[in-house]
Length: 61
Figure 1: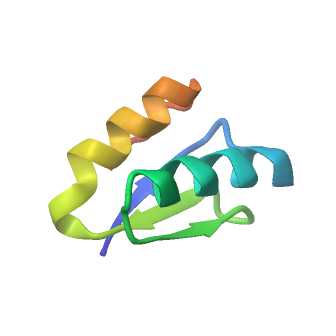
Figure 2: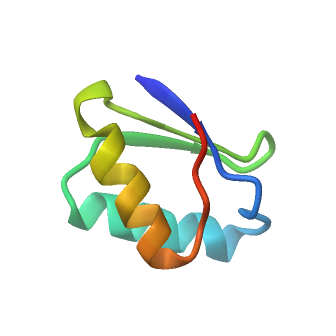
């Protein structure tokens, strides 16, 4: 798993939007709101970053 920093993830609604998008994209993930991170499977990092970008979140490795 690769961990992405998502600094603009601030609330449970953000977590829900991210979770729904990554689930729909069939990407395995773990969201940690307290640390503002999303961990995704290594082979799907680029796809996950694109999904997060589409939602308006900036993800940084």
